[in-house]
Amino acid sequence: DIVMTQTPLSSPVTLGQPASISCRSSQSLVFRDGTTHLSWLHQRPGQPPRLLIYKISNRFSGVPDRFSGSGAGTDFTLKISRVEAEDVGVYYCMQATQFPYTFGQGTKLEIK
Amino acid sequence: QVQLVESGGGVVHPGGSLRLSCAASTFVFSNYAMHWVRQAPGRGLEWVAVISYDAKNKYYADSVKGRFTISRDNSKNTLFLQMISLTAEDTAVYYCARINEHIDTFDIWGLGTMVTVSS
Image 1 (cartoon, rainbow over the protein chains, first blue to last red):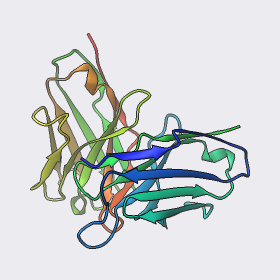
Image 2: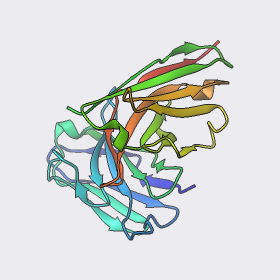
Image 3: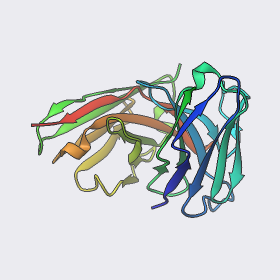
């Protein structure tokens, strides 16, 4: 199984300041067609996860442009340029390159 | 609005069984592979199972293999998860999720249904 490791697990951030979350996979996430099936999800308390970023760096419909994704191979990063109050919650990276699909442990973003 | 609504959760004794359903609406259900993902209380996300759009292919997490069965009824736009031999470790919110093969990830999630295995 591909192990997804996120850092940090907790991130206290001041409103308006940037935030960054790293995700490392135990093996390359490049699919046989050359695409990389790495996505980022956001989950608020009591709600289901929602998609933010797909294929490393593509923002899903309706996702604000303060969210950006980058990386390649086994190392990936989610950045929030200026944190807003609605951004609190837990962020997960996820790989859909091979079964079983796996998730990072989650990074809890909270406001200082 | 594209929607997935799970049902069938509840409290069950260890060793018991439960069948979850996921009703899909406002999209062509039969065009999409579908998944179940679960989340134990206070824990992260765990992928459970997938079924192809035509039900010909199914894959399971090792933790549920042999105990859970994923199925679908495309005529009723409904996904199922039959669970037997349940243990406390199966206690979780169970989400159904649609895989969008154009973006290779889950684009739609249901609200989830809670399964509690307890004596």
